[in-house]
Length: 425
Image (cartoon, rainbow, N blue to C red; front, side):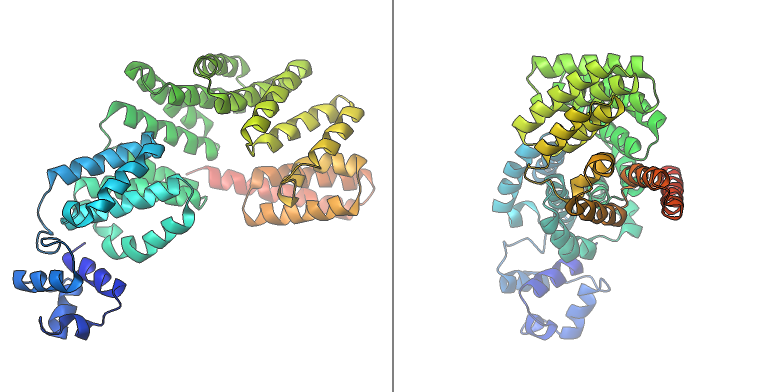
């Protein structure tokens, strides 16, 4: 990371050649060596480039100086991206208005670019994030030299990379960067939020004991700070879900009860939907189907009000209960209702494969089913594929199509092996 990176980017953005930029200032060869980082630029050259690029005086000449005010506002931006993404935009707007004044030190400009990119990933604006990363950040930062960069640059880069790799479904890599980031975080609530995110990542990797370990750390820290009730609520819900996956149902219900009380107190309806969904799953596994249906229906009603996509998973669980308990009429009514909903396309049809094969063999839905399998295979969503492959294997076995049945059972085994391989270190 050197001043030559900045000069080259500014020149390219203005569509100027080396010769055009160097004209009346210095030689093209000398400017090229500056851009490559081989020569330290002379102050009068930087001043002349500032005038040519029409930037704030000092933006190039002060590239090595510290600016405590700018460092403070960048730390505020980082904290807001982690804890209050809705407020981060306001900080970005302030920085953009004073860009050349605040970001003269090149380390601070690199920091800001990483944080702005992280913000885009945080709000799921992937296009702007990728553009910013490819146009600026990979030209500013050499990851092999990261240890030599100032602490704030390293923090911001690691956090950005954690969000970037997560958006690309590279969960192990995201966990690595998030753990690198948390080592440098000192603020209590912010550190707890990062630890909570690490717990989520371990949950995605099916490393449930690690997820519980980090979740408990985050829970303790949130309770100690007595702030961020929504994050404490999410942490208790996470702990409930992770205990559910390891079949510790009593412990799961205890954490979900704590989460539910907080969510009801502060009217976190979007979190209540997740909590009710997890409680519904627990009662389903306990074969307490009355309670399971009660909580799953409560979850779906909130999802409908909030227009959340997770509603399909709730309907899937309800459908499984109806099929298990031989409530065929309920299953048919549920499918008739959801098949009329907007967004009920190939991606979600896979949740209802068992019902379709058993009750509804309409070619339209069969075609959607195989389209859904293609989508899940391409996106490496192995958990869903395992269920579908096994169901198709069972279906063809019952129909006497043993060759097709064997094919899908083999796919089930392959997908299971892949999950076990990717889930460990």
